[in-house]
Length: 475
Image 1 (cartoon, rainbow, N blue to C red):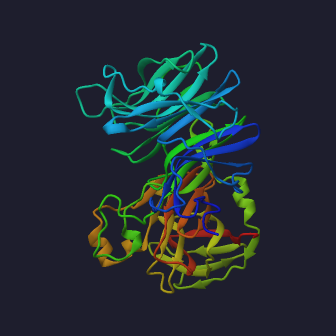
Image 2 (cartoon, rainbow, N blue to C red):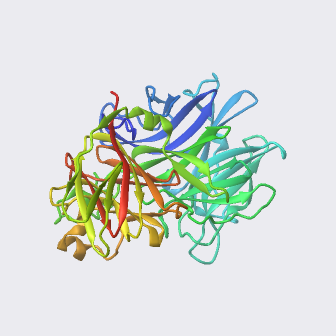
Image 3 (cartoon, rainbow, N blue to C red):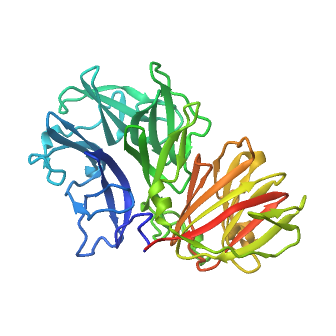
């Protein structure tokens, strides 16, 4: 079943997704990263599949567009596709058209290929085009991952070119240039939701992840939100698609299977120690808005509905300080930790739980916990610090403490709820996991070294755990 919730094709990893909502269907183009490039079944380049519910994916179709991330747009009844190529150390934008009206057959217009101008934009980075038609101006705006020609090192930006015919492009000043990134701002995406415009991009330097800025309609200044990263380190290259008020964010949660960068600590055998790959499983978040215009991430409802069978709760306290509530369990200790084991976890599952952190410094769940709760994957809220934290079993040992010169493996900010309750919803399929908090924030990660063990609860201080529900899939 692995690959249903976090889609990846057999023998491949899902790379950058180029999602489009066309005539009531999500058309999902993506960069397919074959694990074995010598596999005789491997077909390189973009692949396309379609879905109506973002759960059941249609058959993949290779469309034979080679290169990196891009975009497509329909104009005067014809589809145009833009991608990027990397010949001889260069980076260039490419242009294709569909002569038969399909989304699978593309003619390459080689004469339209172009690179950075070397004046506004440095020649080192020029990729990931995103096309938006500005109807009020009669212009197409192309947003790109680029770098500005400047004297310092922090030249990463979202570049901008403008055209009236999709063939000749005029270089403009960057759409976003914060002087914050030493590499290009990858996979830019621009969209409007309500009274706000949003610019989404990914960074692999300085800050690794997918970020966004916002601008109120009628204004022209990008604002940095309170939490400007979407998900965390284990989520990348995200773009959006949707219709009307419905919009989704498509990215990937990397695997840890290939020593791509030569950083594996070979003496340590655990796979959880390894570095991230390029590509992995597709992660889809639903986008919403806070009252102040900030974006929030929640679980798509089709995924929640997919898990239709409830697993009966079991409860075994490993420490004192627990009380049984009508609809859950209360950790009562002050200044000490309470721990309890719950039921075993299946291979593919959904978990929801409400945590009232009364005076707890930390309160959350342990995934794949052993009988003594020494090893497992910890997910917990820290109300005083306003964040959700992920900590793996690596940090629970002396070796782990010596290995990592930092405190937190993964984290994402969360807003303090008015009633003090944090609702966790967790999706897991094999090694891939995503947790949502209060339909507001998300955090994706991997857990490789332990499976088939138990769910656990823990609180450092007083906390209530209510409405705990573990569900498995219908099929």
